Image 1: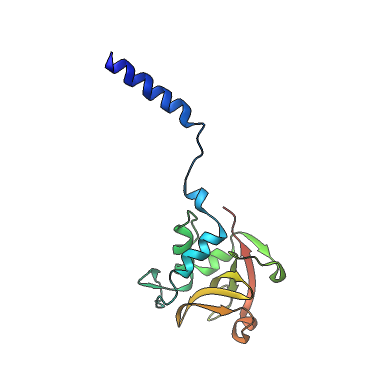
Image 2: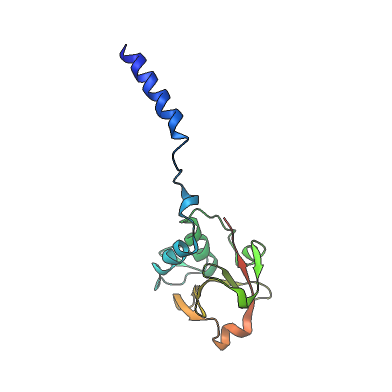
Amino acid sequence: MKKMVKVLLCSFLLSISFLLPVQSADAAYSADNIIAEAKKHIGTPYKWGGTTPKGFDCSGFMVYTHKQNGVNLPRTAAQMYKQGTAVAKKDMQPGDLIFFTTYKKGASHVGIYLGDNQFIHSASKGVNIDKVSNSYWTKRYIGTKRIAK
């Protein structure tokens, strides 16, 4: 009799579980969550090839912050630049990935646009916030991509 009650209870719970909202990494993804994760790491040192809070390079920082929110990105800025939907500079929104050409031709640096002419990235000073309008970055800007989940 106990066994029968357990089976019925389990069957009932299983059948109603499909009616409940699903909480998953997908549900956690939003530009606000990506930005909040990125800001937690301000001051983390720059490390070439770094992918952890012990040290990040620019693309390692993007991979890490997005992975914490259920989004898998390719490992390099150049590979990331091939993803997502192109966005005009005037239409950038917080959470968009912003790309620059720095030490080699093409997308070689990436950050997260924060809004209000600012972006967060990992560069020689470590994870920090810079202005898109800074003359160094303005000359090197090559595009913005929106990554949809």
